Image (cartoon, rainbow, N blue to C red; front, side, top):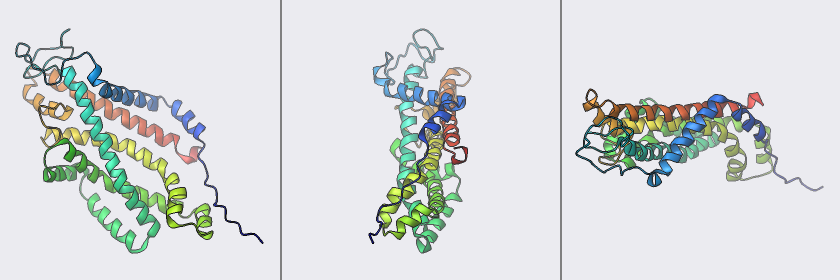
Length: 289
């Protein structure tokens, strides 16, 4: 009798239905448009016909929006529109890189805890619970203050602060997938632990992690703006929406446009990622397929 050694097939998610639901969701489409708009603006910043973000004009200090300066100028005559465009790079970079750091650290630890169980699960879970006991922003501020004020350190601090959420999610999803028949079959035919994790665990825990990552980008952008506002993120004179708000708070009566545009940008990009994340969650929900 010939032994059966073929690995069991992994159930595939109907991708066409996912995309159909995503396209049929107006909120998700609006979120995608907002996110794509800011990403394109950030990428094309060097090519746009606008002044440099550090160029000053002492004859145009705190001037209101005009044809020459559509968003007005700041306290030393720099073009607010230019600083908004270049500031998008810092905010989006901080949001994406922070989440990538959280994913890179959180997924392996969460999968290890859910797959190995025992003392490994106990140690990782207790440390995760201790980190989750501290509010996200407070933990990010403490880490950023410890590491020192810079955009790089702010991204590391935000990523480490967001990591526990991904550990807990990856652990829970791994424990759920471990009970499926195809995983039991893979273990029965003698597949290695790494093969099971790579072929069966990770593909099936990816959708909820993707949704959480999209939503966490919005949180990370707010956190970066908060750290920059406190002087712990992007350092002057480099543009950042948070640092622009920090300066603008001193000129709210004389030049309200200095605070208005960064605030609107943060609101719109966070709204975009939240709407996109909610749309992905609905589209990837297996109960609707």
